[in-house]
Image 1 (cartoon, rainbow, N blue to C red):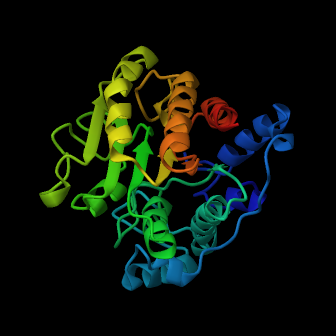
Image 2 (cartoon, one colour):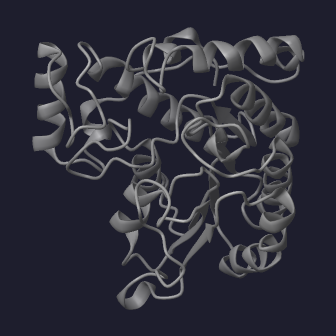
Amino acid sequence: MFGDELADYHFGEQHPFGPKRYWAFKKEFEQRGLNKKVILSNPQQATEEQLALFHTQDYIDKVKTLSEKGEGYLDCGDTPAIKGIYEPARTVVGTTLKAIDLIMKGDCHFAFTPIAGLHHATRESAAGFCVFNDCGIAIEYLRKGYNLQRIAYIDIDAHHGDGVFYEFEEDPVLCFVDFHQDGTTLYPGTGFINETGKGKAIGTKLNIPLPPNSTDEMAKALWKNTEAFIDKFKPEFILLQCGADSLAGDPITQLNLTSGFHAFVTSRLVLLANKHCERKLLAMGGGGYNLDNIKTAWNDVIESLI
């Protein structure tokens, strides 16, 4: 998914989640000639009905109201209510859902959308620069729109995907895997190894906290059991949140991974998608606040999909 409208989802030029993230990705994407090797599809806006697949109507109304005012925060102080943010937030969600439609209709097997993977927002609130949780909406969309149940969600962003985990913690048919920096050292302070799901969902969730300064070698050593976990689940669709803030040099995290880990995970998930779900895999850009890391990691993911 490719379109300059995606750059409109940001919180100001000086904010970590600024518009330069998209432009850095786009420049590298074109320099590598990847724009000539993939099918390009334009963004689209989600409908309010689609937002409501995951979010409460009260919260959607709150975003609309504060977006018009352009004042305050959409949460407790992390996500500013930038004037007009409602429309680009809808574009992020709509583009993720359009990518799913393209995959499900057979127009492509794999897809990638750069400004996506907003995994912190809950059903009732924004969080961590995430206005709407397109990951959570995607899960509900696949279930209600395409009658898929066994969905695997894999997250390699440095921050724990808490907005997905806790909203589906009791869901026994959502396979959840999350590599992230240890929550005792980084926002949002969650995602501990003993959090494996609740009730009938115990054992369907895998949180893998990495200590600060973890390397590719350390993360890859943990992947073998992770892959077996996903393989046993036999997913019908795979969602990958591939945030680039887990790479060394990110200004707000402390992991020392390289884009090689992102390429490795993507290539392994491609094999699982080939095996279990007729090559249905969507990768979403996620976080990342070092522009060099963003352009390298996301384009390496695309090359691995190709």
